[in-house]
Length: 300
Image (tube, rainbow, N blue to C red; front, side, top):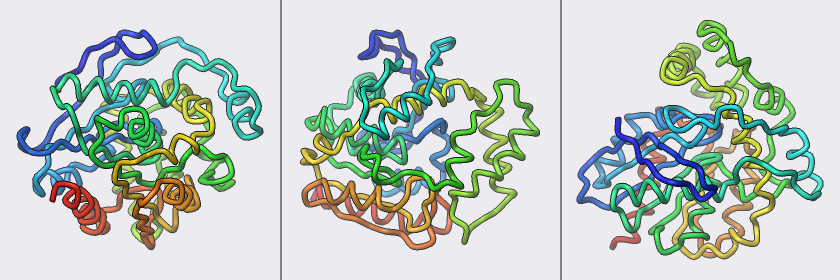
């Protein structure tokens, strides 16, 4: 797959792995995936539904994930960062912020020669998408924020059960078999109505085989909390915005999506029953139709 090479906003030499679907002459739709998740976490069938609706869809691996640049050996103690964010204390130094990750997304668009794009992000990717919308509004046609939150520690925080899983760092030397079995613990935040252990194991195997890199997750988590409160900036977003959130999400609880929609003027909030913090196939028609309808209104 191709890579975009550039100097990042935090002065690092970066390579970002990306993939495109659909006709390049169609309007661009940039898809940004979430915390420690590779671009393949956007299911190919989901992406192709959007491409078949008339969009040039781009997905990519965030830094420190997948086949994009890994910041090997850059240490961060994420515990004090999280504590500072939750108690509104000064944030300790961190390797990079969500603003830098948004800069990577802009670099992908620049590499492809795309001046303006629709932008959709899920979870951490939704946060990066929000940052894009208020730092580069001239590059963003529409925003779709999925299963995300605006940086307020009072909302969108994981439940105790989900916290026990998400904050447990995977051992660097974890075997493929152990990783696959550990993936069943992710179901604490996934859509319980659509639970499928075989699908979970298959997805985990594909992720491990493509690029197992648990070290990067800690730095991404530091970026989420270390960027701090963003509600004032999110409230300035002026591009047409769709907010999608599952009512059963325990990783970023539904009040995170509700708060995002409350902050962004004239945004549309779609709360999806029986949806957790994932993209189960039975919900693809509902989700992709909502996104396509949102994008189409801007182009009309």
